[in-house]
Amino acid sequence: MKLKTRPWLITLSLIGALVLLFSFQNCAPMLPLEGVATINSNARPTATPGPLATPNPGTGGYTQNVIDGMCSDNVSTDPMAATYVTAANGTLLGFKNTTTKQTAIWKVSGGNVIHGVVCSFQGPAPADSAWELAGIGDFNGDYQQDILWRNSMNGKVAVWIMNGANRTQAAILTRTVSGVTSDLTMTSDWNVEGVGLFSGTGRYSVVWRNNANEIQIWDMNGVSTPTSKNLQISGTTATAPAGYSIAGLGDFNANYRSDILFRNGDSHVVWFTATDGVAVDATTFVDPLPGSSSTKVIGDFNGDGKADLLLVNSDRSMTVRYMSYRAQVTTALQIAAPSENWTPLFAQDVTSDNVADWIWTIPGPSERYVSFIPMAGAPGLMRTLNPLRSGGWEVFEYSHK
Ligand SMILES: [Ca+2]
Ligand SMILES: [Ca+2]
Ligand SMILES: [Ca+2]
Image 1: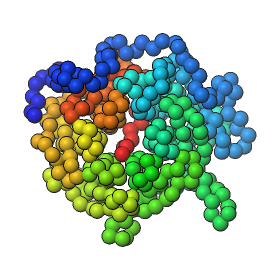
Image 2 (image 1 turned 45 degrees about the vertical axis):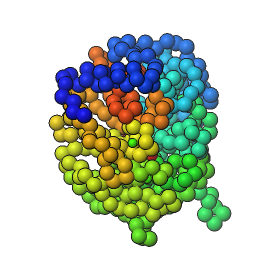
Image 3 (image 1 turned 90 degrees about the vertical axis):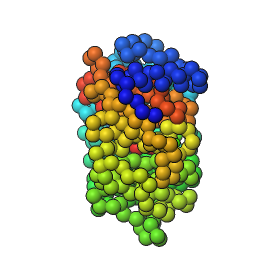
Image 4 (image 1 turned 180 degrees about the vertical axis):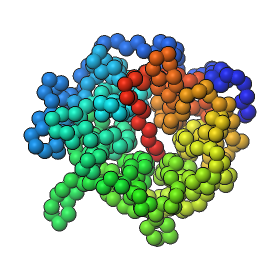
């Protein structure tokens, strides 16, 4: 399908209308761009809120302070908070405030933000503000996404087990060696590259990479010690190809193990992960990826269980490749360039239909909006979630599955 019609949004709207007409999916009401700033005051406290009047104690150690970070869903005092509506399936979106070091978490379901909280780790202990959102994924296998935190000062890693936007369990991860238990740490040259399926347990794993191109996988186990492992190519520990960045994770062959896409200009390498979650087959897609494109979004856009690619070209037009293992299964879908500053970020299933939708930020009259295009084999009508408030708030971008 070739789309040339101007403007881009109208084109997608027509497709979306057809999708809505014939599939009866994504039935949540469309939110007009100008109307989404309305937030009522029916806030409720989180399940385990920290008392706002009592800052973190700062009694010398900060081991517990990340756990006791203060979260609020008071929409009158925390404009990135959102009103609780109902519990349902869905996904979590994260936000970082580069100024205040706060973190916001939205639970999104059915295309609506149903609960949002704003968390502060600032307190008397200065290290508190060093805790940063590092990953989102289901780390205990209950189908609810959880939060991974990383301390940029001391390298410690913490997990919040979540029920929607409510924190139900939290711990700094530890390990025990020769009977001695200590906090797990990762030095600053290690980066979290994504969260994906590498264990076969239903619990997601964290992919780390360091400056020496070493890859380490943590198979998560709730707030207990993760199992650390290396991937292997032909029985030898695999290192990332030098000069290649990880464009994202996706299960391209539907074996319930995430595969890793590396890119370096117009070159790419894909590591297809075997069902043991360790052995990888390093190969390429059949069709090359143009060097002028960026692999912006990876996700299963048509619900066949296999990850697909959204490429953003240098002229901001986009190409969608529906993939099966190494090859695209249909002619690529070309999409005309969206308006200036309309930015696709990543894919998440915000409509809870097991098809990954495209998360965007788009400019509004005074604030940017977090928006999404529901996918069901074709792009649907773009819909807006809440505004992304000004004052340092940025969407936490992550690669998932
Ligand atoms: Ca979970
Ligand atoms: Ca796979
Ligand atoms: Ca697919």
